[in-house]
Length: 189
Image 1: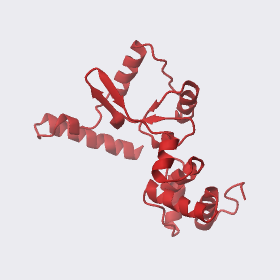
Image 2 (image 1 turned 30 degrees about the horizontal axis):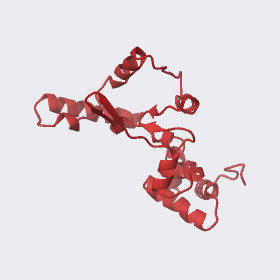
Image 3 (image 1 turned 135 degrees about the vertical axis):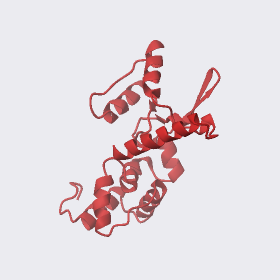
Image 4 (image 1 turned 120 degrees about the horizontal axis):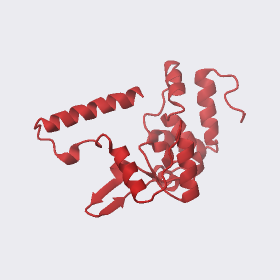
């Protein structure tokens, strides 16, 4: 939440600069505030079913995406690797007059782009530092582990393991046990 708060402060400053005549072009501005309520209002007006979670929304969104074959409009890249889901970010929406052009990402596209099997994407996301692993990787970093600096680097680490016939979950187990000194990091052992 601290990162998101800092991002919001930067966005507000960019809007202030724009309104103050900084010369910034409108298409260089971040997504405007209150865009989510506006999108919800528009979707409801058009008769689109809108699901709202009371708590962590990821499982509800993933289930809805799978059940309805609908993309998830979010800025959470985890959805791009969840089986049966399809992610559309605000940056991937192009409003061209009355036409909306959408670019989306799903597990097949991500796996092909980083050259790993779809089944290995959760391990790649873990090593790259997602919502669930960031804290663990930070602790591991304090104990000498150098986490991959990008999703691509994490994918390369998993690809190397697969080339040596090492299952990707073993790479994650080794990180947990070797760097966090956890005796039973995973029930897979």
